[in-house]
Image (cartoon, rainbow, N blue to C red; front, side, top):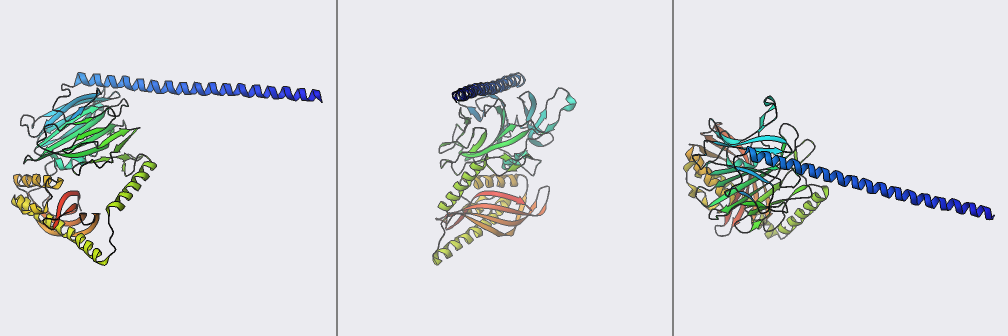
Amino acid sequence: MRKLYKILLIILMFIIVSCESNDVEENKQSESEADTDTVKNTNIKDESKSLLEKDLEWMSEKNQEDLFNEAILQTREDENLGSTISYSTMNEEESLKSKKLFSSFQGDKFEFELGYFPPNADGLTVTSLHEKERKNYSFELPNTSIFNEFLDLENDLSYKQYTTWQLTAADLTRNGTLEIIYIGRMEDPDGISKKTIVGVYKYTGIGDVPFELVAHFIGVNENSRTNQSIYYTEGNEFVYEDHKVNVIPVFYENGNWYEEQTDEISKASSAKVFYYDENRNIVKKGPSETDQSESENKEESESKEETYIPTDPDEIDKYAREEKAAGIDAIEYATRSTKARRDNNYAIVEEFVQPDSPIDIELKNLIKHDNKNDITMTYNGGEVLETDVITSGEIYEVLIQHSFDIKGVKREGNRTFRSKYRMKYDSNSGHFRAVELIDDKEI
């Protein structure tokens, strides 16, 4: 019996020693794999950093212009900010020229040309720069429709008068690959304000157009402000110097772009971030399902807080009348703004426009544009398709389908549009004023 116990004890000790030996081996293997992953990640970062340094060195040699004081995009840290090119339709010497920016993305080289292209169009084109010239090709950046209000769509996509355009490259995300930052700024001809639109494009290396629009933001400032630069910080944040407070419209964090959710963003500023599916089509979702769910819950919560639902019959009648009034006044704005553009007389529509609003600035420019180019419009009437309550009794969004007779453009005749206006109640006049043209599509 004692012999059996001794044998069992020896076997047990052997098992324990074997297990400890296996644990040691597994720990060594895990530590070795971790060390290998760390070395790999370090090598990738070092390689990206090395490629970025080569990209910036090549750009420095190829580009004649460096970052200059008048550049709209600045940096508050010692960051990798490449050359900046600028083009203005207000400068007679520049208005018939173009500028070139050479930029390299992990060794993949491109030429960006910004400015005037004969016979009568302005714009931005991109040309690949491969070793063999026959493989080079030209293309346009995708989704530049974010700049549409700064373009003369009736004149071969030329830039409107009073616009300045800048293009630069910077490693905003610190991932070793430059991003393209495309900036448009349009001054109000009356000298009241400046509106700025910024688009951030990342390099994907995929397909014939290897860039994607990842974020853009808009801001309006009083023209009297001397310093209206945009800068990005060490925290990968874009800071826009708003006329009321410096705000962060968009920022980059942990591999994703985000819109800043804060009450400090003024009504004159807005931002948007873009996400893509496997087919590279833009989709309406966040960087993760969790983020999307939280965002939707927040929007739902904010909607419940802002929207008051009346229960008393008298109150219901009151808000129904206000909703109807918002639609009536939206059509009145459309009617009067068309006459104002035709007669070159802003006073016709003034009482139905919110002063210093986005639509106010845009309309003044349209009136001058139509008069200069002999464009005439006649309003044929419209109908309200739907009205959304943003803030009961104060702000409504009105969708209208209406038609116009247009002369002096390439496609003359009767044309029908669906336009969505944001209307705000004005207690002094007793009616709603147009604040913003949110959407406008020809059908």
